[in-house]
Length: 365
Ligand SMILES: Nc1ncnc2c1ncn2[C@@H]1O[C@H](COP(=O)(O)OP(=O)(O)O)[C@@H](O)[C@H]1O
Ligand SMILES: [Mg+2]
Image (cartoon, protein in one colour):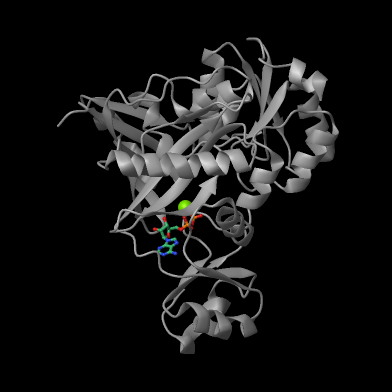
């Protein structure tokens, strides 16, 4: 333990390991490089976006014990950008003597929607009412307790709205459960939100906390389309979001950046939808809207450096470039007040996140 504590703050030149080589890993690697660090990326795909900008790459499955030991051997600290890294991989790294941040517990909780909502409520962060669905026989009691409609979500593996379906009436409950694979699930009451918000926050190794301004988010077909930050909310709502994030970070003894997705209700109350124990798509606006963006903030936190400033220097509208939209790069590159971020993915499959643009405007107005 003291040996681990002695490593921090990591000096420039240290190697930071990253599990997952997608766009989040790529932007983490770029931020790390700017502070003089090197990165080592482990991803099953040889051409993953982060591998193009990292000093070391290991092409292997997350379950490859030998590869994990190799990553542990070259990394001063290991973090992740991919939420579904098997818990066993984190255990293997820790077993090999690696320092892993954020803590494996945060990852394990976030991977299971039932564990996540249970944890949030116990920590004092409000969510919608919910019930576990382990078998068809659980549907009736859930409908009796929560009413309908209900949103059925698989406990594990869902992302971008996948593995979710609405139960509109008791008669269709079993068919809807079958449509998400008749797998362990959670039934949620409707959130009745007026807006979707999120807060990106960070906790350092010394327990220091930092919060970015809340973003307002718009989804299409379950995928994030656009975020606007700072959101046009009252200071009270910002404070409420910060309190929620602080509760979660502290309860997890967290180190790193977290993304907390929130529902804003018409009475001004916030509910937590879910949290991501990593940098988050709704924090991409910070790349051009803040002095220290979420990626550098995460690197600072896991390396044991002081956290950086989080206030907005501009209002930013972030738009994801999905699939063939990326072909507009020439037009976008010529657009004033627009910063273009491309992820270096070869194949523009429909709906795939290929890049994003940040459109800047003055804060006031
Ligand atoms: N309980 C709910 N009531 C109403 N809408 C919801 C609820 N839960 C999720 N949603 C909607 O579905 C979207 C995706 O759900 P989420 O739980 O965030 O899954 P994912 O892991 O796919 O992001 C949310 O951003 C929100 O728009
Ligand atoms: Mg979500």
